[in-house]
Length: 177
Image (tube, rainbow, N blue to C red):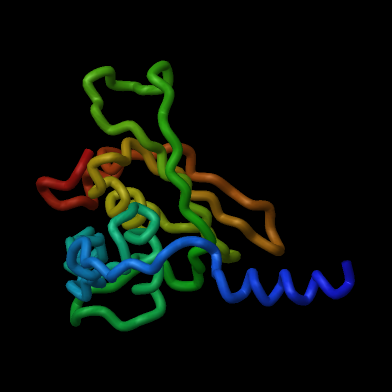
């Protein structure tokens, strides 16, 4: 049996697996990565009121939009426009479905609540809250926005579920409700 084992191994290697090779055939074009930039609108501040600004975003989700808005707090923006989100850092944003019984307006077609969590030690001003809420509401699938502030020194706070309609005095005509 010991002599037969090496002979059987050699024989198996010479015969292969029993599958004959086939020619390569093309089944379509190769995958292509799109380098076309994605642009969206965010709300910045000009003379104490919200104004829309077109910006480049890394993706198409509400989370990408809020993250981009928060990044603008640390980078210079167009002359005359500002943000009131200084000193705050983006931590997380997560969209969850709204139950039918939780909707205030039965004709409302939007169906997600966006929970935004920021890190920072200061309270958000009303204008800063309006920037986040109205920017997120530019997405057609977001019905309400809740901003949570995670603090290391003071207790964490939450804004409650908000809509842009609450900031009608700061928002331009045509802003989402």
